[in-house]
Image 1: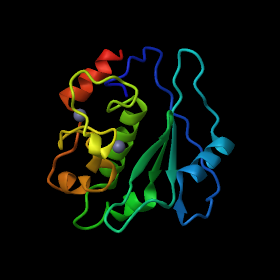
Image 2: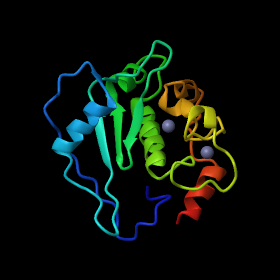
Image 3: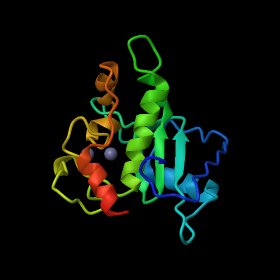
Image 4: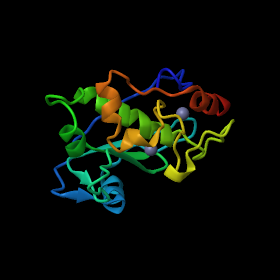
Length: 175
Ligand SMILES: [Zn+2]
Ligand SMILES: [Zn+2]
């Protein structure tokens, strides 16, 4: 955030815990229901408030072949599926947990900032349209594999995805 956002007034993080909802999987609708009950900060003029929910379970739309690690389900709301993230990190032969979690969080924040072509206009075509609002560069933080767990291979290889020049250019144009 400090690297890419123009926030001279600073960035404030507030953390809070809620009782475990006891769900074996979360739908986007259920996530939105929790948010309505427990979110405290919204976006007043001249400020953006972003809500990160660290879910204790998996996403309801997971399949055998594709596990969702995070989702930006509203314009300033994201969820990270900690059960899935923890299952893919921190063990023998797995990437560092903080690294995987950070990369997924940064990717979802990218969506909230309008990447790719999701509110922030693209300057040069680099949208991987078959995969939605994602970047076509497999090394980019906004590649679709970052939120599906395929990113784990990259992390094990020692490569941590960052925004590529096309995504940086899009953000710059939006200020
Ligand atoms: Zn994504
Ligand atoms: Zn990109």
